[in-house]
Length: 453
Image (cartoon, rainbow, N blue to C red):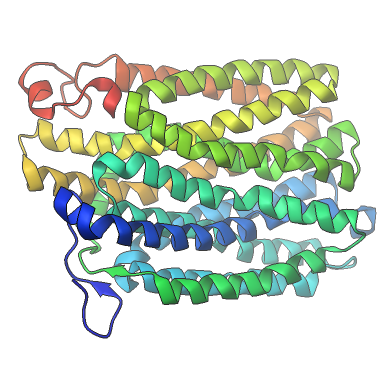
């Protein structure tokens, strides 16, 4: 199965149940575990500025608007690099690129360690923040790699676990910051803790992961995915779920400080709770989508997110800290649940399209895998831009009114759009993925209900 002397697997067919049971599952789970570890560290590095800004008191000379701009820049780079990271898996191999991408995390971490002190210019912080954005790319390459290892019937669980394990890097670095602030330590202590962890992730990936020779870059698939309307529809929905998760992860502590007057330690006590629960529930979202259908779970999730945001508007307008924190945590949980359900929808949509075209068996599987893999990088990148929009919305809201209420009103309107799109495209129409959206032969060939996408 592997090339002698190498870590390349030359034959891989997870849809073959015998192969999966005898060989595939064990190998796939091993690669999933070490992929999660590397992606976890990547998320921590990407979001380290969400906690570094908590250390940056008046002596740093930065306004709340400056800090929101800084975290917006970090989020933006993390979104953009997801596209090349998606294609890097096929160029270098999943194992090889995991080693490289993990090692690259040393660059922003060491750079932040060097400049993190009062007197450093805001432009320098922005530049170092740009470097930290590369941590956001690890998600895209990891998801593309793991998507190839698992059969369609297991993708919701596997992708949810992979992404959830990565997402949990956000609360972990926030918890580490809480411990360090509580002990009277500074930001360089936090950064120093992560340098050996980055090296460990790279070494373990090199020793225990594999490359799949069957994963090839297909520029035609990328073009086809970019031309497919479902790629962009799912990108909008992913802005609503993952964009919310990453945007709120960067902004939550700053809102607590700027609007509710919390100290760095008081903010750190609260900021990790939402990202932690949102990360842990992401695999549950994938599992529920496997069982009940991604579209159904996603629709219900957006209804709940809109309701929670309406309560946040009231809590923000009345400066009710207890209600604000409680509902914000609920919103984090919902964003994590939606992350799992929306990503589960992607393979199902393209598999459904393949069957609706009359393809069967391996041809249908290959078509679905080809387009879903290509679309994941684009969807992940566009979805992460939601985090940029959230931080910029908070920046403008604080500049205009001194609170985040205006931003929450905008988020509420967007969630209403997302739930309407989910219902109109993936639940109202009889056959997802068919150009006409009609029932009949296409639906019968697909063998998939609307809710199964």
